[in-house]
Length: 529
Image (cartoon, rainbow, N blue to C red; front, side, top):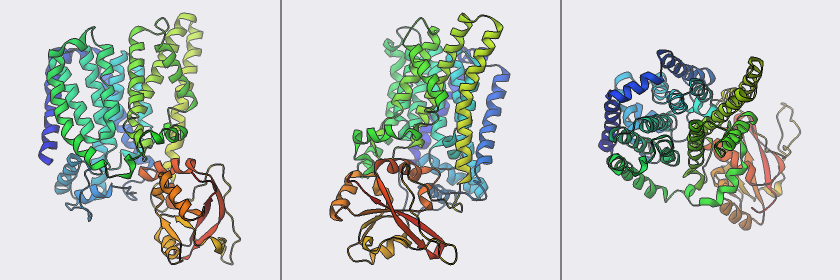
């Protein structure tokens, strides 16, 4: 698989290089992008790095998330104690970290710098694709700025787990799909499809949004492009061949993971956790998305080309939910493709309002007023992202303890002891209940009580497992919530956001932890899921 991954990357970038050397493609890019545009997108890429480094203390206090430490082992030229897991470390990225470590050493600066160089291009590539699609400079710039400030992208740009780098590959796929639409040829279509397979190979989560990028050449390309099989077929066969091998391997590995056993049963839960869909669910962005959808449904409202971009964006946004929405670990980091397309759709809605406003209010004062309204709507999304960035940054690392509150649930309380710390307030009759906790200093003592059981909090993502424990314990199921439950990103934050919405809890007490001068807050499940 290592040789296959290297060959896949080389062929992808070789096809990209050949495409950029084509005269019609270079002329298209020269016409659509000025030197100022290139400087702006390059500057915003630097701004993306500064936003991440300024929000997270990633070098002096790096916070490893699940699976990420394996890449740090690769940088050090070692293998993790449990070996390499193909679902958790992508082979090409692992080889890159190994090579970088051999040349530049294994310091944390090198580790974070490598992650940044691999993943900071997504915002600029998406902005360039948007500008080429819509022929609008301000739409491209706006999309890039929103992605520079995106909290989850900002977090993952400094971390090695395969999130930011595949998002860059996805955004490059959008750009190549747009080039294929503007200048269709066997080479342009092949370059797009090979890059699409590369984006999926880097992260299978990209599958839905990458596949939906076909809407761009189909909607924006010349009529009848989809029927020109001689133009499509070579690139399609090469891309399908490259994506088939790693995809089949991942499907086989995924069959044994608990995350993939639920399918559409988790759909209502996913849709109910609105916070997972920020910034798309922020009021200003949501309003503009609605306007974009409405405009794309009515020909006479929106300029034809902008309407086609809105439809393509809507398809990519929807398809980007799959395959992740079919398994239990679904969360914000799985929505980067959908978020990118959704933000573009919102900007199409802003373009529609600007177009209609210029027709209805041709005067300078009217246009200025409308532009202020549009700027306010777009800034509402940006301001919300800056607020989320600050929140994530304040809790980044392992030395900022904070016990989160369950929504719509009172927190347990207790009297303070002579040292001013919470005293034990958990009733003794609950010590044989089933307990969910992520810390051994709670679980180990719990296991000493005859009849008590302790489970990892990850199992709370599975309602069937919780029902089994409820039945086995006669309805006595507890959850010990500590500061580790408010992890700022990665798997933990994703399931935390879902779990706290899945069940109804009642506060029952506090357990002090003398070893850490801390405590956990204990809740009891009050309804069988």
